[in-house]
Length: 195
Figure 1: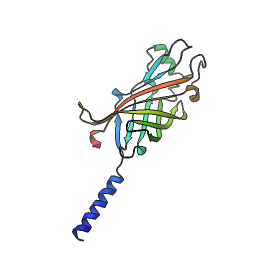
Figure 2: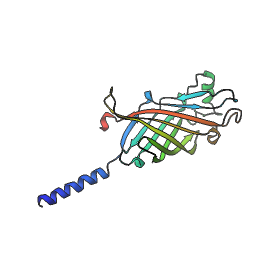
Figure 3: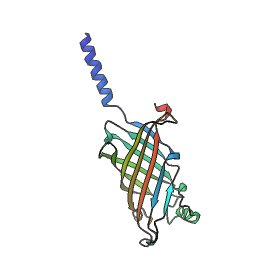
Figure 4: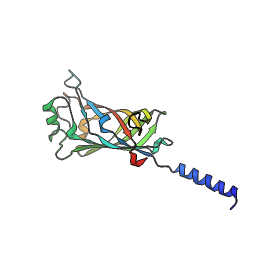
């Protein structure tokens, strides 16, 4: 094999390696991730509550964003409305029924690029054992080395909305609003072992 043939072979192999490069897996940082949801209360106010201790993975393919994906798990027990009686009620059968369905999950099915910072993420949201498609409007905040941890980190904000009655949580509709608006913020980093 002459030098020219070897060089061509290496170039093809290198190109193939990059072509089939896997998306980078970023592990969600629960300490810097929150899901806040709002609802209308008899037309008088718009209360909110949030979930914490969120776990999951954001797989990012920067070259081909359509190959990216999101997989998130939210513990129902982490809900906080700043009203103790309401937090307790949320765990009960009429609402999230945490004893039977302790987690909420979101698994993406499609990622569409609007521009370099804005994405439309379609996925299956499962609440109380019911799975429905929802769409997240996501904004890339920043991607790069975290100044404190030195880990490769990515951060997003996202919003979505849906009717809670579609997930068998329809108590007091329509006096208490059916439509739920959700705001999400998250940081996720590449684990040291995965670098």
